[in-house]
Length: 280
Image (cartoon, rainbow, N blue to C red; front, side, top):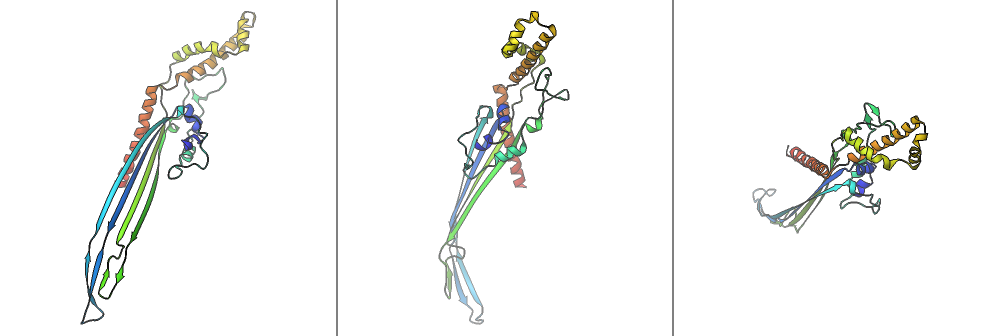
């Protein structure tokens, strides 16, 4: 949460109600064992420089594997900046690097376009359809941490006829901890509202967004110049249409659920791809 909310893309992710899916897998492998050996040295009487060695050995080992998988889904539209996160705070095994990944991906809205022209933020020009490059709307990534330790110990002696009990350590133990975290971010894709729906909602919003000065002017429009009245009403409707489009493009719960499934599918595909590469 700290790394995502600190990225420069967070405001866009928050406003766009992006969905973040996370899968954490942790695997621990323990190995313990003993491998005693005993060498009996029989010097050669005929050739003093040579000898015959008889080896008696054995090995006992035990292996244990444990795995844990946790899944989580976050709707970034419900998040706020985490004030409690500081620059020294890290995850369980260090920094995951998601902040830099998000910053490098630059998941930021491009300049909206309509009919091949940049959308003007001020009236009277209002876009009918504003689009954002879909290539910057989602991505998936992986961070993997591996910690391995091993130790071996035991006595060893060399006599004239005997050597043992182990050349490589009588007792041995090792442990490998592997933690992998997958993250996928995707945006709900609501259907584009129809012009009729935008116009209907804009008419309802027009009275709510007009400024006091505009309201006072329109209250006396009978005495005002018709051209000025038309321009003021056009400006109000232009702002109302922008507000209407913003409201109508808010994703529904069903659209958010679909985005969750897309994010989880992206993680699954990443895992399967990694397994395929490893098997090769």
